[in-house]
Image (cartoon, rainbow, N blue to C red; front, top):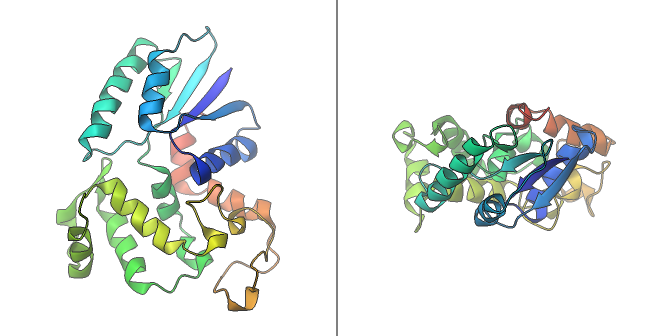
Length: 224
């Protein structure tokens, strides 16, 4: 049996369910373990059958020591069963959202300052963390200084949530917003929603454009 374990619940879990449905032919069992700790705990207790494969969507952020301690232990467990426990190379679900090339176009967000910050932040990411020294824009640096408990993941989530604040594009609810995967137009008041998705676009077409974007494809390349 093939498994995908994610630390995400809600919209993040929904994302992996759609990856399974649209890209992997529903050949995997997608399970949420509730947290990075939940994935680690489950891996500790794992006694896989010979042909079982476990793909772990574990958030890897190099500037969060708690996450890194868990990741290092998880990596040791993976080394003992390298053909059965495979850690996916990802930062977090929200980073996938932030990387989507049509994010700003589709959501129609008017937050120009956050759009600029998104560009600067994405350009600064190296090896699972932001390299702040690469960011010269003063407004972006001031924004980063405003985080009481700074980490790459916290910043990425904050920007991603601001750029998808419309309920129909939300990525922090029980599921991904309807506009990601349902036929257009699903907005309650379409005339008042700034959106640049082609009118009448099928939901399957939209979600496939998202799932075949570069970051998702890079992550799941080892699976498919």
